[in-house]
Image (cartoon, rainbow, N blue to C red; front, side, top):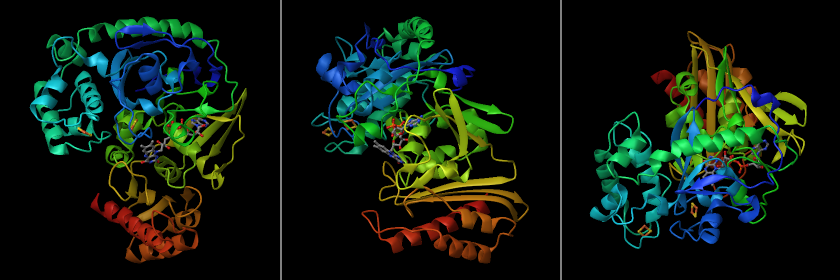
Length: 479
Ligand SMILES: Cc1cc2nc3c(=O)[nH]c(=O)nc-3n(C[C@H](O)[C@H](O)[C@H](O)COP(=O)(O)OP(=O)(O)OC[C@H]3O[C@@H](n4cnc5c(N)ncnc54)[C@H](O)[C@@H]3O)c2cc1C
Ligand code: FES
Ligand code: FES
């Protein structure tokens, strides 16, 4: 995912008052943005497509999973998303696939067949969500090992069948797929998915050229900004109108590019975009492992980095991640722009160095140097699909065993995502040894202020952070 564009600085977005245009299964649709708050409500209540289920409405269960097909660098790519948290507006210009859209009139598709043959469904409430996540896997290029197909269902919960039979079904599906230049043609030709999928790329290209003409008329006028909606539609469900500035559905705002030794990203970049970025994987080689600890595939497909920063949760994983990397953010309001270090963005609990009408229009950070080390650690009650009790990231630039530059950040130990200024400064210029780590931990304790809450006592959180700092240095030794 890299859309190189100069439109970034000059783009204007206005409230969307005209109809949205997207393809819903096989059909072109153009609802007014006020037709429904979320895509889930649109498909179930307006289109009467009841196969998509309502479970938690908080992004946790996956019963409402749909697929979103989008043209990226001329290629059609499908991602699973939780429709309960997806603003209807974010469907603009895309192919939205519900369970009805992967059905054949007279037989089961490859996923449904495997689920039935492996006894992978019981009450059936979760089944449409699993079928959609697995159908998305079929429509994209499958991975060489079966790890990818299991990862594809990491956002789906089943409360009665037991996961082993679902895993067996997933592996059976994986075995029928082949790595191909055109995975959509492969599954359509082999009658694994309906044939209409082969025309979607052309149809989206036509839709995209219509939207390009509209794009010049957009102007940001609202102070309420919406990214992927994964925070807003949980916290403020029911209050979210269509008269906001939706940043997620603007391809121009979704780019990751390298300019010399700096990485620049747009405000619509999601965690999944980072996972797929060659630049990120080259300079932060363990990014896949780190980001797997953050939410689930459908949420990562929607959650933006900018939304994580502005959400200002003291345990926001990507705030911690990019604080250690000393990222900067550009805030824009009408024609005025200013850039500030992310480290200066947080003023107090949920208080930001940001005017209400300012939005993050860009994020940048210096790419890690060759002689550098970066590590991210997170402890939560469950390993996956859980928020952190405490998290931490460490960035070091090294000259042999001497630390030339250090950045360490920690979450869950204060009212804001905390950049540990004193600890970072203490580490610089020092030789790494056991004593140094103990001394750094002692400095760290002077600049945190954890509180006891549902995620643990303040003593427990302090102990966790001590252990995470040790874990950073153990990983440094293992390199
Ligand atoms: C099931 C589930 C699991 C989750 N797991 C994790 C987890 O493991 N770790 C974690 O850190 N978070 C987690 N989250 C929280 C959330 O997904 C992230 O914080 C995400 O990055 C928010 O991004 P978004 O684009 O969805 O934000 P939105 O909900 O769209 O917006 C969040 C806030 O940011 C503002 N905003 C968004 N973009 C901009 C912009 N460009 N400029 C100005 N303001 C903006 C919005 O106005 C709003 O105040 C989880 C959420 C869910 C539902
Ligand atoms: S209804 Fe549970 S994730 Fe959407
Ligand atoms: S089959 Fe009942 S919840 Fe999964």
